[in-house]
Length: 184
Image (cartoon, rainbow, N blue to C red):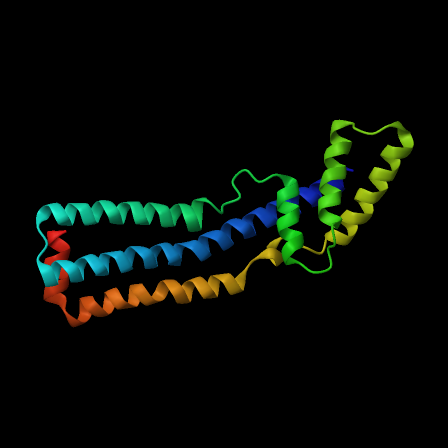
């Protein structure tokens, strides 16, 4: 059962890495977009209305809260930092066709076998047989099959617009950009 356990642990580590990478690559462009959109809005307001210092400080406070909320919403809130083996298996099975509860059952049976739950030698033999057969079928997976490419493309598109707008403002109106940036 050691080989089966190592195969299962390796697959779950791959799923965790794919999940982390997917969340970071999905959330980082969105957070950058929120930060750039807010910075651009404050710069435009400051250049058009010449905001007093108290209003600029209030805008910076609101911006800090918005960026912190975006970081929580799109990064920290979705990271699988303390996800159990069952949760990782469920995440994998939601995104990969043809697994059909095999991974989650294997994780649960492995946990039961490690803790000694179950009655009799027959139950242990059945669990070992199921785990061996399932891990043999699951060996072809690395965990990266659960990597979400479509969500990453979508978040890159949504996050790029405010970044490009801020860059265009900085290129087209450098004096207004830098004077506003230094006032903030």
